Length: 290
Image 1: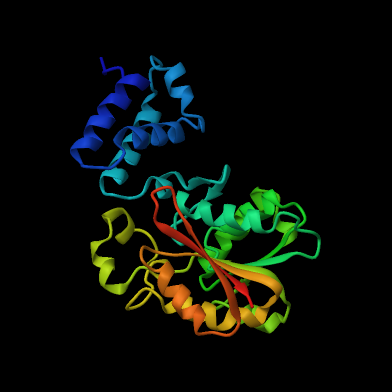
Image 2: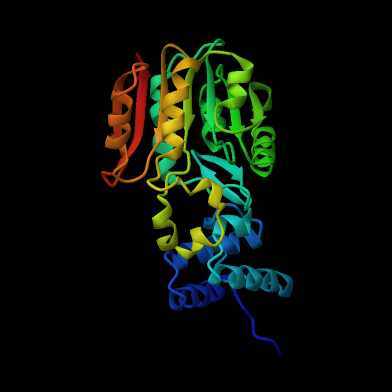
């Protein structure tokens, strides 16, 4: 007679197994993966049905998820989804996984475009999953957006997310290098937002295995000092912004003051705001057009 595995029993076993594999959040990972296998998005289901036996097909699917996770494949790539700003986004290996730190950037832009009317337009540079611009569109019903990414795979994911969230009518997608597609379009914008690659090249080797082995390197590598993409954004964004417009960017540790210094040498930028994340790290830089 085969052993009976209940939800509670398999969760306890998996948590211990993930602990031995030195994964950062063993219990949470176990729960998210099992909820995914059972097609139950709310993890509370697992506790309400703690004694429910699992079918052999469910066990087989869960074991495959466990195997992938102990090889350090991120949970979001295994499930194909990630929650961001209270919304569900499709995620693939063509896209960076949206992170909670980036919600600070979105919230900052929401606060600075509180009365976004029908003529308010924003561009998201390096859109990836579309998490930034689609979240903004969701919470600002009259806003329009343009989303740019150099990766056709990432753009396909962003377009799919726009459809699933019912936002496709208010966003245009462009494949291209940073601001190039917007220059060709010639429309002035109220805001430009970006979470560009900002990891210094020398730091790539020290990244966690989950990141280094699985997430797209083009979305991580910011050049020798991590500032390659910021230099271009600062040099080129001013001409694309309306008077009173701003450029909002997520930044890495110790980069905010460097961007502030770069901006001070450029006549197109006026006030600089630097916002910290919950850990007190300077995470967002907002530059206002002079």
